[in-house]
Length: 127
Ligand code: HEC
Image (cartoon, rainbow, N blue to C red; front, side, top):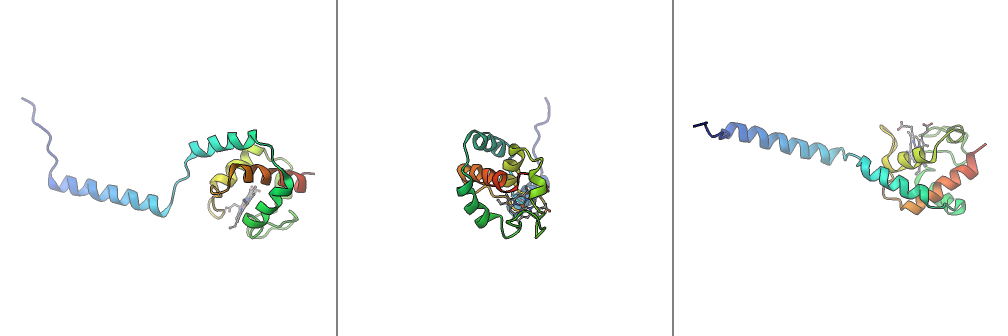
C-alpha cells in the first residue's frame, strides 16, 4: 500500500509563510491585469473621441508631468515627438497600464475619457 502524504507542520508553516509573502507583494506592487487592459483597449479604440473633452482629461491627469504644449520634458518626456509615430492601441495601453518605473496607471479613467484624451493628443501634437 502506498504511503499517504501528510505534510509535516514545518512544511505547512513554510507554505503558509510563502503564501503570506506573495499576498504582501501583491499588496505593495499591484500587478496590472494585462487581459483587462487589452479588452479595455479594444473598447476604447471602438469609441469616437472628442478632442475638446480630452483637453480636460489631460489637464487633470497628465499635465503635472507632461508639458501641455508637447515640446518640453517635465517629469515625463515631451509628447509631441512621441505622437508623430504612436499607435492609438499603444497609447491606450500605456495610459491604462502606466509606464514603469515612474508613470502611474490611469486605469480609473473611463473608457470614454481615454478615447477623448487620445483624440486631443492627436489634435494637439500630431505634425
Ligand atoms: C507622475 C508623472 C506622470 C503622469 C501623471 C503621467 N505621466 Fe506619462 N510618463 C511619465 C514618465 C516619467 C514617463 C517616462 C517613462 C517612465 O520613466 O516611467 C512617461 C511616459 C509617457 C509616454 C511615453 C512617451 C515615450 O516617449 O515613450 C506617454 C505617451 C505618456 N507618458 C502619456 C501620458 C498621458 C496621456 C498621461 C495622462 C493620462 C500621463 N502620461 C501621465 C510620467 C507621468
